[in-house]
Image 1 (cartoon, rainbow, N blue to C red):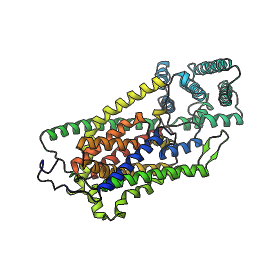
Image 2: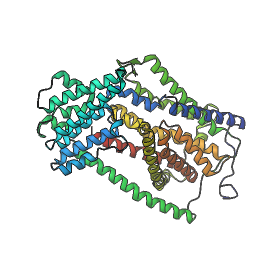
Image 3: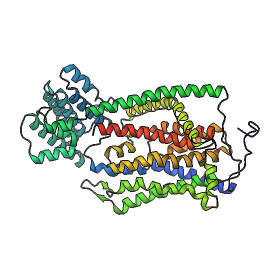
Image 4: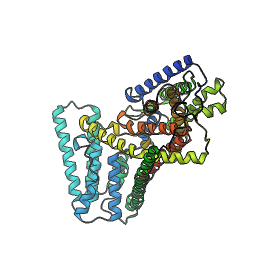
Length: 509
């Protein structure tokens, strides 16, 4: 919208800086983005949060955030809580653990052993041991076929996995036969299968046994978590649809008018913030790589093991990167002017801006829901066609599932404080402002949203919802002029998602 479109808007003036500096900073910003995309998507060098998750892998026998693991633990705890006895109910529970995207041929040896444990526990006296034995024989048959086809040329890693699985099967057969398992075998089985092994080693004991009850309890918390998710989904669905309809009516009646005043071309304020922030972000990535190179060790399998404090470093260190957004102040821009230009303002009151942020977020949920459905479909297609599961990984989920309470709190501060403050200032306060100097609303919103999405370390097929959120926040910036609303919406989104994840993983711990 221009001055002629709405005479009540102030006259457009260039931001501080020069055209030459704007060009240089924009080139730096997009070259930096290209470097981030390369590092995240093609180089094998993980993002900061992904490296934090990777550093925690050695501390976990199994991945507690794997969808199959989550489904199996949920079913076993619910079966214990509900005390399912009839075969039909047990069959329905087992059906919930089936992952159509991961057929037997693509499961690891350890996953198939845990499948046998699941069968034995759920079916119990209704043929549980027989079902587990059937899985064991299928595994052994596959091993024999692999050894025969390889003609003795199996690599050491495959041999080690097969021998470990055979040892697991021998221990479990011993347990299911009612025999005492040695301390060494118990320790080895728990070391490989953790919670599942502990449950299997209580097989045959009554559910009232203290050890078994402690392992399988939590079903009530799980139901609370499911109810919490359902209530949140109902509120999001009904509230989002209602706000979306209200937004359409308000737009139709001309009740919503943009308050953002684009700068005139010629300044470099926004581009300088974005360029310097991206450079600082890449420098921090380099420092993280340097720490691993200098201080990491290798385990017995030859895998790199960063220092135990590394997850805290890569997550907490991003607060230092946040200082990069104040770069224009080093070039003479006052703090008051900085606040005005990036949108840290509330001319009509903070409460009104907070309300606008909540309303705008809710009104954008229907669009976000559509994109999530498309993303799920694309991931299912990708998995079916390629047989790979990489796009389903989520480093934040892994940190929540594997990290200590202190690390989870640090991650929560990053998601609910750092991200709303820093990402909104850089992406909507600076980048969107810089783009709007020369481009129309929707083009600027799309470009800034794509930039925002690819700065995250998710696989490409998971970026759709992130880009959509960035697009919604950019339109909120155009509507309000201030970025307080987008900050509130960003914090609300991250807090809701992380809250649901924490509650769910706590319920199945």
